[in-house]
Image (tube, rainbow, N blue to C red; front, top):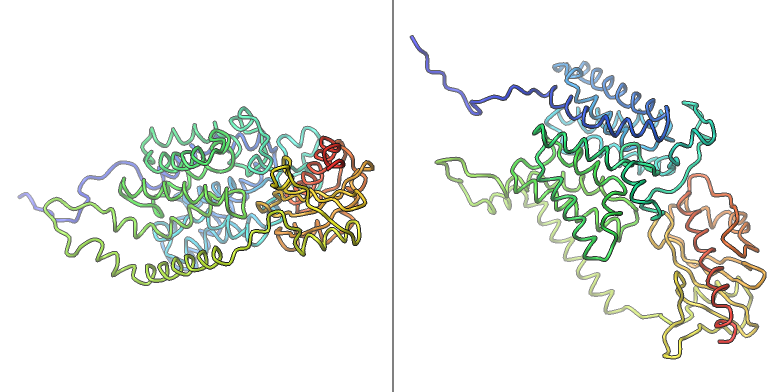
Length: 497
C-alpha cells in the first residue's frame, strides 16, 4: 500500500552539501592565497595556516563546551579562517591573528547559535575589531617580494620587513601591478586577476549569484566615474574584488532574493565610495558590508516573493514598520539631527579664504617670529595657489611660508605651514593634525621627526619614518616635497609679489 507523506517544502533537494559549498569557496580562494605567498613569502602561508587552524580549534572547543553537534568538520571554520587571513597584512603578529579567529568564531558565530545564525560576516567583523584594537599592526604593509631584496625568510622576525603604502594611499601603482598583485596590502586583496578567477569560478559553479558582485562593483565604478575618479585604478585597488565576490555573497548574512541582492550590493558600493572619498579611512569595503549585513533582514522583508496562491496577511511596508519600528525611529531622529546640524553649519559658516586666521598667525610666529604677514593674491584678487599649496604667505622680511593640506592616514589629516628659503626648509609648524592619537600624532609629538626635514631643498633625500605611522610619515614627506617644489618652481613670482 502506497503512503502519502506530507512534509514542508522544499520538496526537491540538491546533491550539494554545506561542506561541498565551503570546499568550493576555499578552492576559489586558492589562486589569491597562492599569489599572497608568491608576493609576501612563506610568512603569508604561515599566517593563513594559523588562522585556519585556530578557527577550527575554537569551533571544536566551543561546540564541545556548548554541548552541541560538532561542526568543526564542515569546513566553515576553515573558510572563516582563510577569509580572515586574506584580510590581514603579512606583518601582523600571529597572536593578534589568533585573537581575530576567536572573535570571528566564538563571538560572532557561535554565541549567536553557530552556522546560519550569525547576523554579520564573522571574518569581516573580526577584521574591523582588529583594526580598531591594533591599528598600528593592522596598517603596516610589506612591499611585494621584500624577502628577496633583504633575504628575510624568517617566520617570526618582522623587524627587517620593508614596508610601504598601499595603492589606495600612494596612488602610484600601475594597472599591471594591480592586476597581478605586485602591490602592498592585505594578503588577499592585491592580485585582482586571482580574485577575478576565483569569483568567476564561484559564479560558473552556481555557488554564488552574480547579482551582488555586479551591483557592488558596478555602483562603485559608476560613482567613481561620475566624481571624476580613475575608475580602473579604484576598482582594481584595495579589497573591492575580495569583498564583492567572497564576503558580500555570504549565504547567511546577505539577502535571499535577486532584488535584495542587488539592493545589498548597491548599498555596499555606495558606502565604500563614500568612505574612500570622504571618510577617515582609505578603504571602506569591510565597513560597507558590515553595515549592509545589519540591514539584511529589512531588505529581505521588503523584497520577499509572494508564494503561489498565497497572500500577505498584511502590507509589506506595514510589516516592516511593525518589526523595524525602533530602528526606523532612531534612524529618522539621527537623520533629522544631521540635517539640523548641516543647516546650522551653513548658517554660521564664515569663509576664511584669503584670511590669515589666528591659527595661521600662531604658526607663522613659530616659524619666523612676529611680523607683518601677507597672504599673496592673484591679480584678480583670488588667493595665490599652486599644485598642492593652499596659500602662500610672506612677511616684510621676504620670508615665505607655504600652507599645505595633505593626506596622512586620514584624508586631509595633515595641515601644516612650511617655511622655505634658498637654504631649503626653514621650519615646520602644525596648524591642525587629524591623525590617529598615539600613532600618526607622533609626527608632531616627536620634534626630532620634523627636525630631519630642516635644510631639505629637493625631493632626493632619505628620512626615517615613525614606526606604526607609515601613512602619516609619508604624508609629511609629501607636504615638504610639495612646498620645496613650489618654492623652486615659482621663486621669482613669489619674491617679486
